[in-house]
Image 1 (cartoon, one colour):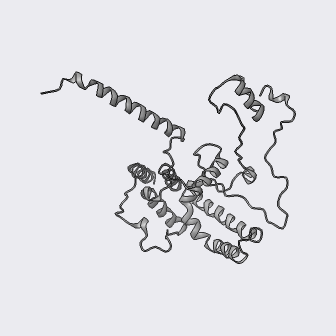
Image 2 (cartoon, each protein chain N blue to C red; image 1 turned 135 degrees about the vertical axis):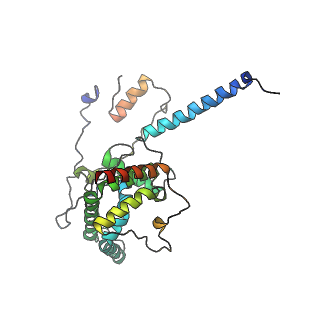
Image 3 (cartoon, rainbow over the protein chains, first blue to last red; image 1 turned 90 degrees about the vertical axis):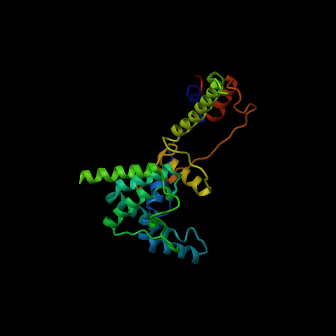
Length: 170
Length: 110
């Protein structure tokens, strides 16, 4: 920025919203997790937040997709997702990280990260009493012991190392 | 009739150079993705989520497990802007850089 300072018409400013929402709409924090952690946590979020999500969808249905009418329900959905992510970060952080890093390497395909997913699901079951259940299918694919796509060797290797390190630590 | 190895040397050289080119580009892509494999077969949802990831982390292919987003994320937005140029980045001329600086405010006198 040499000549740029000479142009007084160019301004820089902080990106802060000065026209906030009215007080009638409650304040809410946004979900800070990115796509891979969200995908990894999605089944837990879905199970934990089912009533809030259903309530939100019902509201959308009744109000004909009204954006302003369902802000309260939407905020509950956001808050619940944040609390679910906090749960996972508190109890199963290492397993969570193992799984979402695998997803990030494998183009976010769950089928290629079953080894780390089973470790994560085990941890979630032990600590948060959550059992992954895919709704509306004949077979729970993540429980299939001999799937067509076996997952990547890298995921299996890293998961084996992780389990070994965990056993050595305990 | 056995083929003398000198006759196969050009093929070895060709194979080696194709290999260097291919693996080299692959390595650069892997590095550019933050030591991750390429994303592919993306639909509009994936594109949206990757844009959101960029707003949250500020780097390409960055990931974050933080439950709560920073305050600035609430109003974060990215707008793609364009300016007309007679030369579409074909020549790195000083004139072009002056024009770009005038339009975008990012002056480059390197």
